[in-house]
Image 1 (cartoon, rainbow, N blue to C red):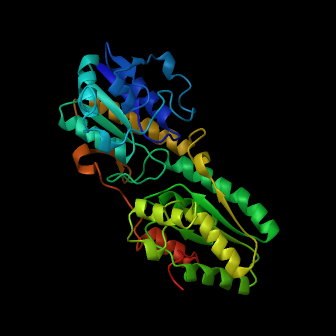
Image 2: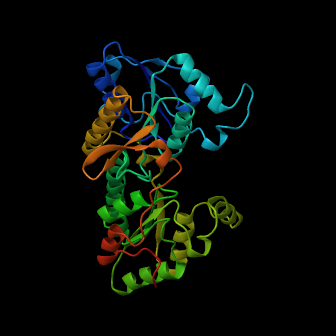
Image 3: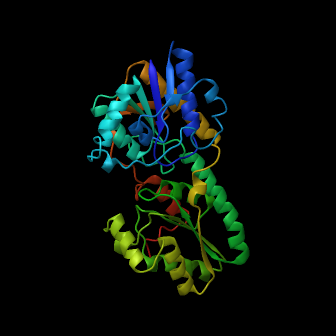
Length: 357
């Protein structure tokens, strides 16, 4: 049995522990198994590159951030476009067969799952494992890498808050999350943010400024605002992402966080700053929760391969590790419910989402 593994899309803590769990399960339960790593995600498969993954290669991966296979974003929309030598999809299928793979594990997010479903439809034996710090993959309660990112962002908030409080400032902290606000919501609540702005709840400038005004009037000396990078004004909520980006660029606005900080500062007359956490959120060693989850998901996915269950992706539903058909989750996202329990809890303790004056 020959098994391939690739990691695709953005990196995050937990990729290496999943690789480790898949490998350990296979080497401990399958005779004559051959495990190979495919570098740089689907780009490596398109090029037909692979290298052996031995038991020794798996040592030390449980606590190691990033991915030893390296990763790259390979846009789904380019997969079926004709290029020299054929489409990228046709090249991947040909190399899958040329490598003699019996199964391919694809560790990645929503885009990775779309391509995995495409490969599965074309006859390749594929099993996905859901990864993203955005926690936005449809059909699973949690993705690996999310909890570690929440821990990292929360700690960053804690550190920024000390200087914000000391200087009596208004501070906006930008968190990753273009489509979904899970990371901003969870870390914002955990860090005690006073306001949380996420893509699913478009905000109003007047409502934001009124909330800050009310805090100042109440004698509060500082304000912490968590802003998802995909947060949108209510006036631009119906625009596509590309249209919003173009409109902001035309106005000289680099990010919504910076623009909002300028607006709040001019309105209140108080010192207002913004901080973009950026790739800090992706790096570092996985937390204990993710180490356990990665081990569970990786070993479960490997067992599915041994049992011949292909065309699926591992998932967490309740307290159970299970699977979904790739075709059922590909192209779908899981968004924060504006009327859901977590938002209601946040509102109940006084956190504003910038949508109510």
